[in-house]
Length: 169
Image (cartoon, rainbow, N blue to C red; front, side, top):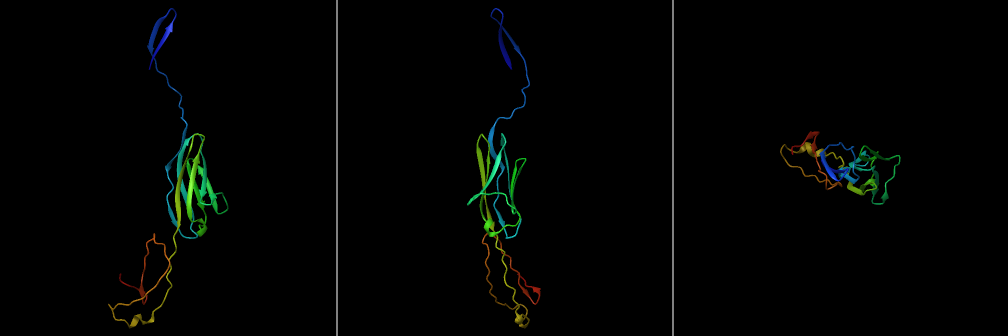
């Protein structure tokens, strides 16, 4: 760094010097280091919607769902520590399905991250016993039809058993 100074009778004195400036943090609006991710849950599952936020000065975090601001309750805990915001549901229910937004604010600005909590329908086909499977010869085809509700975004795995033996796929 170069400095110029006038001293006495107008003569210019020039010199080089260095100085160490104290560490300072410039104010910045909140921003997300890790955004919320969509999740699929089954009723009764524990859920943690988590994101990481940074910015200065101090950040205040709020959570929102389609029907308004989310508040802490015995089944819903809102946590924010060291830049990590978490909405924890102890037992998810159908009522918890929907779009969630984490909003981070400070006096400089705000940012938000949104995700969807989807319901994974537990698919259960009723168990049926077919007594005539023993009368079929090895290699013959058996036709059976079953239906059950399922979530189209989830993979469905079906296992057929005949006489307590796993059927070939």
